[in-house]
Image 1 (cartoon, helix red, strand yellow):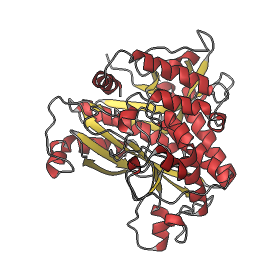
Image 2 (cartoon, rainbow, N blue to C red):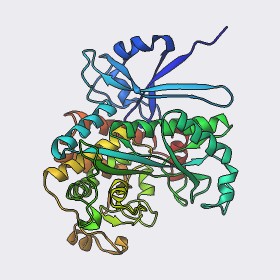
Image 3 (cartoon, rainbow, N blue to C red):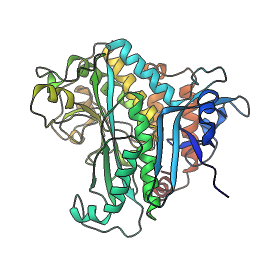
Length: 436
């Protein structure tokens, strides 16, 4: 019997998990128009496959509508094919559903264009680890560490290219069995599509070679974490770069400055959406090269928002390469939701005419809370519960999303917290390693 080729219609949900339905490949044209049935309460399936308290119960029907511009079709060396298409969740009448993460991002990007006349250019930079009980020590950034996983690195980069992404670089990172993979920037929602595709194909490439990859925020609090760094720049309707101004603060244009100011102002109340696991807050601590305060850094990897260096020399190339980097995120977050939160915060900053503070140049962990507040800085929430409270307490942030979003999101995350309640930190880390 010849196997029937199937295509998987995929979404990346509140839990950052990729779920969906498969259908026969010869039905593609029909499914692009009619979609596949979906259930509202599925949004409350946590990363541990518990169903959180849900306002939908057993009622309601939705559709998954595949987007042919967001497909990945990859055949590995053993002949195994993986074919999936990122999809939107709509009502039966075709309207975007309030809890479709992809649609929430589209709304945020539409707002950014409405307030500033610009389009987002974005790249997600991912760290992951090979799951192994016996990591080889003393290989940080080393050639040997790369060579030990050359087959995986080459398989992954080939898969990314086959899926239509533009591979940039891959390297052995600092941590045990840790690697970092980077793809070229993409425009708008495509950048988040590519972040999902990259994560899925990384896991697939590892499985193809008899290994397992994890994007868990942190495997061991005594070691390093795995971050997701979101690099952002802007172009106008003609495609001209508008992120850089040689006379602006740290090289930021007026739009970039205001966008950065908005992100920094609302960062404490959006981190629940960008670093949404219980163990995310084991990583977001001082001296981890992650993010612990709502501060701007100029080429500073301890800052939550960083102005990145450029290597270009001529003015146009500098303008195209110049970007800012959001560092308080990890792969427990849906890329769509994380980016939507950041874009809304930046758009709010532009709407309100905010100005970014001067970049920090010292160790903020040495300052008292009073000294931090006097300079406009705060320590970011130190637990998921505190982050959820900060999100709930900020009406501006809640207002960026549909009316019931905050309550549903909180219920989802409280079920996740409850699942882990009786576990110690290492057991919690293992639980997340098994799901991400």
